[in-house]
Each structure stands twice: as structure tokens, then as C-alpha cells.
Length: 213
Image (cartoon, rainbow, N blue to C red; front, top):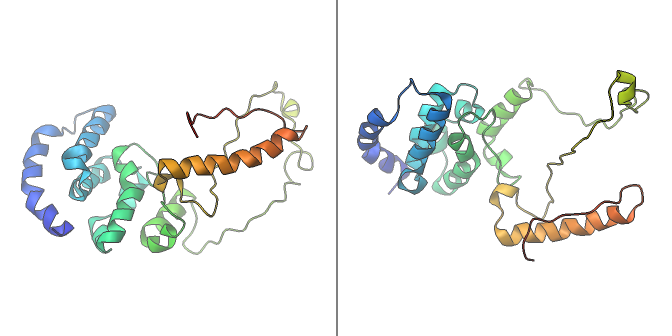
């Protein structure tokens, strides 16, 4: 059946269920847990997603996924693209206290679902509708000609974690990777890490969490 039909056929039953299930007097944690249970109904069928979306939209105004996703926008896509957009946005419904709540599955999603992603990303980065990002690798105006010494700030030595959230062109984005692709991705990255380990300026060791290759 079409998604529209599925949603309409189950709407009354779902409302009866929710009337005893949701309480706006719940704590944030209780709301989040109950929202997850709503999403889990009937194996996460998309009409449950849309139903839960309305609850998150009404009760978690800082959730940008729920802010910019609407039933009308979702249903404007064909079924195949609805499946992809569902994957992009479901984390924001499962985690209603999220400030962002969505992840593209492939780079093409940013174009295909630009009506959803573009205003959301601009909101997140506080960018105007016509702002264009310009990449600038010049750090000469940071610290002392590009060198930032924490001692100059009166701070002791710091322990720092550097997170790099990028992807390789030949692979899906993480949300759309299966186990085999994740392992192949790690094998590819290990070759780059070996180069860093061989360099005396870096060295180090890689500790993989993958049990078997």
C-alpha cells in the first residue's frame, strides 16, 4: 500500500494508543524513551516515523530535523526517495533531544533532498540564504603567525583529541555502509595510517575495534 494510505488507515488506532502513552508532563528523558517506543512500533514503518515526527516537532523545538521535516515534504518524494530520506532523518526522531538529528546517506542526498538539508544546514551554521562558503587554509592570523601556544594563555599542557569526520569518494557515507564496506573502508585507511606511523614526526599505533578482517 501507498504510504499515504498506510498512514490514514492506522491514524485512528495510533491516536488511541498515544492517548494513554504520552504525557506532556513527562520529563525530557521519559519523553525521549516513549518517543523511541512509538518509532519502534510495527518495525519502524514510515507512518510511525511521521506520527512520531509531529510529537518531536511539538515538544523538542531545538531539534532541527523535526523543525525542517514535514509530512508534506516527505510525501512529495517518490517511494524510493522516501526510503532514503527516512534513513537520513530517523536518528532525529529516535533521539529527539538532538540539535541536528539527520545524516546524509550519500553525497547526492544533499542535492536530492536540498529542500530539507539546505535550510537545516544554514540554520545550524547561522548562514544566510545566499551565503557561499569560502575555504581558507591561511592560519597566519591565529596565535603567533599560525602557532598557538597554550602557555601564552596561562594554561598547562592539554590533552587533545582530533576528530576527523570525512569520507572517501568511493564509499557510501557511514549511515549507508554495511559491514563489508566498513571493513573495506578501514583496510583502505590503515594503509594511510601506516604511512603516518613510519613518519617519526607522528608515529603512534592503530587499535582496531574490528574483530576479524
